Length: 245
Image 1 (cartoon, one colour):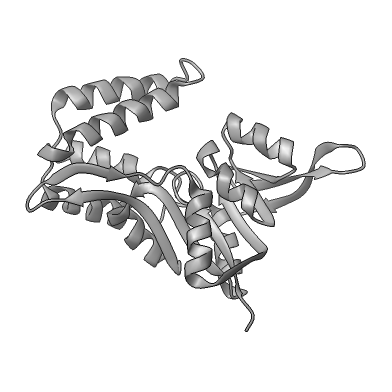
Image 2: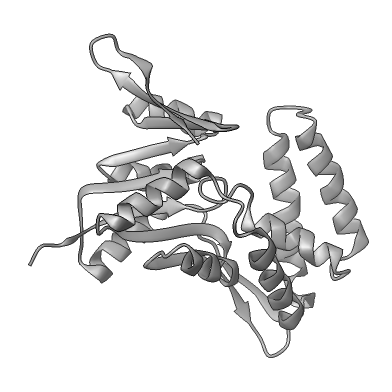
């Protein structure tokens, strides 16, 4: 029996134009659930990122936001979080990139098993993945108590190569002709495993790694996407294809 081919997609910043985890933080804040000091600190860091104050502004913003929310978990009611997650998916799920959406649809039509792997919470990843027809999905797990979260967290934003290997064994998949798409250094592990790695709108760290390993690089801006590939004869990246959207 022939093993099935697969394609793995990061979600935040790769298919989804924002971060599901980021949007649920904003929603909880708008609902008045999160403490004002956490919101104020996050807003300041977000402003610094928006204004590109320095090269690590986005990482600082994420660190404050994620760290603050993780520390608040034992005080966060599960029902409030579930309501915020539902609102995010209902309002934001169509906000996706055209290139990765079209790639996903094409690979699905060709019979690939499609897998969503995200550092966002499972309660956000599952409905988002179902909406786009993914066959399997993996998201961060927040342990639930009776009324509140316990504070125990299982992260999934790194070590995605380990997750992929587990899924390959679980679903009897093949690496032959496989795809993976990601936008940050946390995706580099799964990109290194597959035959067709794609660094999509990559961070500088992932861009360097992609160029070192001759991975395809895709940039989407406005109503066009640009596919870059390394030309072996000259040892440099060239514009391979332009897609109008």
